[in-house]
Amino acid sequence: MMICKPTVAAGAVMFAVAAMGADSCGDTSKPKDDNPSAVPADKSKTKSSTPKAVTFGQQSASGEAAIAQTEGTIRNPEIIRVRAKTVPPLKASVTYTLICATGGSAGSKSGQFTASSPIDRKINIPNGRPDSCNVSANAQLEAGGDGTVTIKLRGRER
Image (cartoon, rainbow, N blue to C red; front, side, top):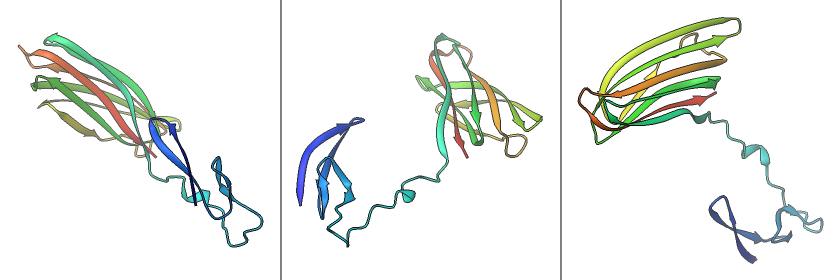
């Protein structure tokens, strides 16, 4: 077995390893023709069937009674979450509205709640399994609160 020089890809150090009939350190996935026992890697197993988590809106604001407001669209949502964080830790009022479309129909949902930071709330999705949802949300520091508030829209796509 031969270990090649490390390479850096997307912030991670990776080592290419040449073994059992690999062509070179540059390409270790192809077996040589003279090694009939070598089996190519099954690439179908590398594709993940796990839904993709995404951030589709984020905003921050600072000051007394600061309000952070954001909006975004998520395609084929499985889960939608509203997250808010304040520095220093304070209570914040969160308001949200979502409009979800499925084929030719649409459904909407609005809500408001107050909670202590950090806040992480799952929002029920109208229309069952919509094609997309447009979400707008804001978070405001409690009355008299002075600091920074950040609101984030997170979701998981099917």
